[in-house]
Amino acid sequence: MVNHKHNFIFIHIPKTAGEALSKALDIDVQTHKYTFRLEKEIMDKHETITEYMSLNQNNIDYFKFAFVRNPWDRAVSLWSYYLKRNIKPVSDNDFETCIKNFETLFCEVPAKYYSNSQRKVNLLYPQYHFISDWYGNNMLDYIGRFETLQEDFNIVCDKIGIPPKELPHTNQSNHKHYTEYYDDKTRAIISQKYAKDIEYFRYRFGD
Image (cartoon, rainbow, N blue to C red; front, side, top):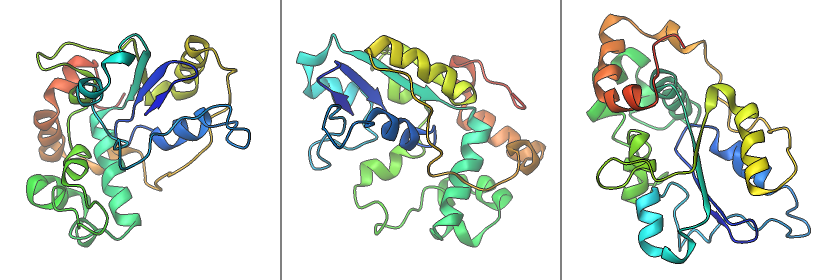
């Protein structure tokens, strides 16, 4: 997602409050002051920075940012998202079963929800994948955290030169604190699947 007026690129990592951030960055949609979204047929909303920059080298100096989330919390949020929308086969199983069968359940998303196969996979990609080049180097100017969402969004607003705004509550999932869903085995599965995220962004279980 790109804004040419304020020269920024927002990398929308799935399940990191991207919808709320997008709405806030479209605050003057009636007067078209902030034209934020690219047409869907041109750019998927979950593009990685390498995918975006490979097609848009002229925007290399734009302010580039994303938000990340604790991987254990993100997995619970994704499971709850599937349940809320009755997306099978995830919605037919409890959280423990889904995590223990990660590849065969979380990866099986119906085409009617995600017709673009790349986008389907993107929902499960480690977060570092969205912000890194082919060698694993961070390509962004700023990485905010879901856990300090409003505070970090205020920093983004200052960087891109727009007034700070209270973020709306959108696309929320109703679930308990993520730590209540895990046992030792499921906790270890997420630790393995997202080991690089955990190391790269310095997350711990219970943060």
